[in-house]
Length: 372
Ligand code: V1P
Ligand code: CA
Ligand code: ZN
Figure 1: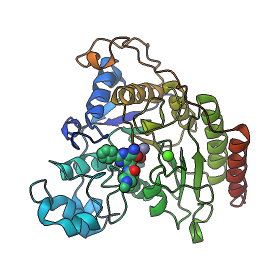
Figure 2: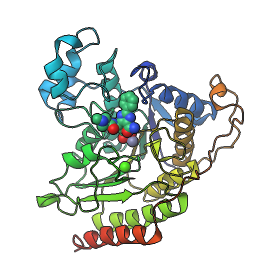
Figure 3: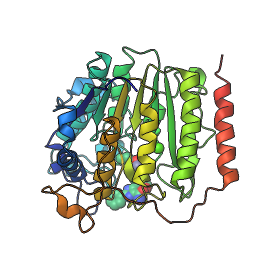
Figure 4: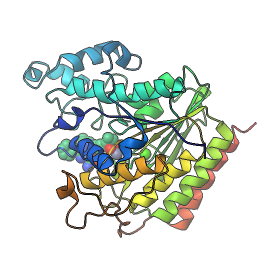
């Protein structure tokens, strides 16, 4: 452990009030709930809290095409009926609807991840947190899976200005395809995603054999999992792979996407992780004492998302949080138990010991190819 880590936490109160639509699983209000829970545990006294800048179109265009950014800027729920060709072209629709203040929402969550990377680059903090970020599916010229702007790619590009190598780790239940694709041909970013794979689970990519190409060959790592993985198997596999990755790759900084849809009981996910299991991965990554950028991501049972990211804020601050949630204006969401932690789930674990061992061996074998 460093003597005392300096933590920068990015939050904008406006981000929680956007609305994707009545049947849409993505509820930005979970960000507001998380922030209130963080405040109720008085964690704001232990870190620096910043309101992120709203990323400028030119900053978003460091990764995205200028025409796509311009379209996101221009489109509104009232005008979208006139742009059916563009809506199709940019994959806007059911998963990625056009809603009120969409562009400002993108500017805020992307601004948070960019600011986080800049503070790390300038050594103004050791760890930077943006729970509104982590939207890992967005592509250069299109939206995908509730993600419009890929803040992670923008944050990594910023970190690459000061670091020769950046490691990206993704524990969202979905494959981090947008980040992988952005850096598929380079060895300057290693991407590692743990995710459910198979049965047409979104987005359908992330086979263990997807390893990067050209200069990037062996610098993309995929850990495809089946339904029901539990804390013991997940954390064991995570620690084995990530230790070997850090030892081999020697990154200058780490970006950790903490999608909370890998928790038990998630509306879209299918894993059995408890909050302590999920947070154990965060604790493990923190121990490398490298500049660390932490984001949110998926998470569709919003009370559990708020619990998870609050516990993880505590982990990053080396602060253990009592399980009884202190009284706050959002306490009704956590009633009747008002307990911080959720236990692991009980759906059948379809990941046999031999399956996990095969995946682990394949990943470690690929890592040996870049050892010198
Ligand atoms: O399965 C699909 C698409 C729609 N079909 C044509 C295939 N989309 C998923 C998208 C999941 C996105 C996850 C994002 C993240 O990784 C990062 C923030 O967590 C999908 C699902 C599902 N069950 O997988 N979309 C929806 N459900 C959906 C349901 C109701 C309304 C709108 C979208
Ligand atoms: Ca993942
Ligand atoms: Zn997800």
